[in-house]
Amino acid sequence: MGAPLLVFGQTGQLARALARLVDDAITIPRATFDLAADPAECRQTLNLLIDRYRPRGVINAAAYTHVDRAESERALAFRINAETPALIAQTCARETIPFVHISTDYVFDGDQTRPWREDDPTKPMNVYGQSKLAGELGVQDAGGQATILRTSWVYDLFGRNFVTTMLRLAEDTSQLRVVDDQIGRPTHANVLAMSALAALGQSGLFHVSGTGDPVSWAGFASEIFRFAKWDIQVTPVPSSEYPTAATRPSYSVLDVSKFEQTLAPLPDWRKTLRQAINQRG
Ligand SMILES: NC(=O)C1=CN([C@@H]2O[C@H](COP(=O)(O)OP(=O)(O)OC[C@H]3O[C@@H](n4cnc5c(N)ncnc54)[C@H](OP(=O)(O)O)[C@@H]3O)[C@@H](O)[C@H]2O)C=CC1
Ligand SMILES: Cc1cn([C@H]2C[C@H](O)[C@@H](COP(=O)(O)OP(=O)(O)O[C@H]3O[C@@H](C)C(=O)[C@@H](O)[C@H]3O)O2)c(=O)[nH]c1=O
Image (cartoon, rainbow, N blue to C red; front, side):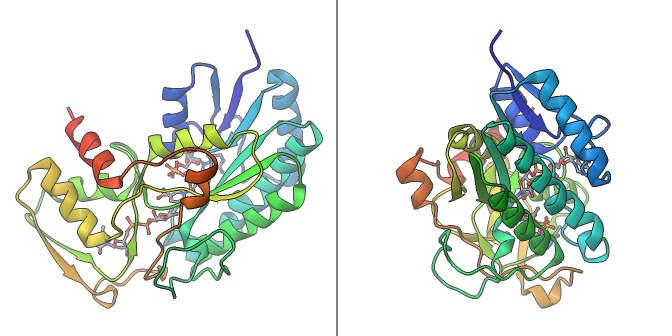
């Protein structure tokens, strides 16, 4: 048996996609490695895990992803999304193990109308985005063979994401009000997982998402119901009519050309969404 791939996180969208794709992936649950634990405990657990598995690579699929809740759980979001990922990166750098960490489109303020490039200035509008940006900086500071993938609007057919939320809400109503002044591009968890595998052994920052025409959340919802052949009326509303604790960027389309030119082509988000919806049981 060769060296396995070590994945932090077990129940999340990315962790599960990696487990589906990679035979020798070892996914680590929160009960084994709690990223919210104090730094001394995290370091100790990390050392034990690295000694035990001697992995060929590490992917961090664990994160604090509750965008609205983060507004009132700032310290916890920073511990999980920034402080502990920096420790993981330091451990991987010391042991010369390739590391992939994931960040978000929410590091940008949305105040732009062309797709965001890797070197565009960041300015997160919410605590989740701030914590993820701090995570990027901590991972970069650690050095080593570390790659950061920024991605957007990740979904799968399970777990907590926009697709499962829309399908669940539509079971009880035939009308939904969804914001149409936040524009981005959805990314299936499998696409993110394959991108993370392609990025292992690289270094630096890459943007990754589904490709094709950008869409608003309302447009995304309409496509979900069109592919599911559900007769649901999606009423587009401005963000002001759907108040949330966290402010979200109005435009967070990522320019993925660096990833596509360097590593691999990325699929059109509509095609991936249609396939995923068709696969529902
Ligand atoms: N979801 C999205 O739309 C987007 C996600 N991203 C980024 O992509 C990456 C993967 O996200 P995704 O798979 O969607 O996330 P999910 O929310 O689906 O999963 C998060 C995972 O993190 C784990 N986790 C949370 N807190 C802790 C903790 N204290 N200790 C250990 N594990 C913990 C969860 O475990 P448990 O089940 O025990 O809570 C879960 O396995 C993250 O870095 C995220 O920030 C970027 C852009 C968009
Ligand atoms: C459920 C619902 C949401 N919305 C709005 C709220 C919000 O502006 C937008 C998206 O809502 P959500 O809360 O599902 O998505 P959100 O948690 O903001 O999704 C984000 O998650 C993090 C982890 C990321 O990194 C981002 O890339 C992005 O995917 O849709 C409606 O307008 N109507 C609705 O019925």
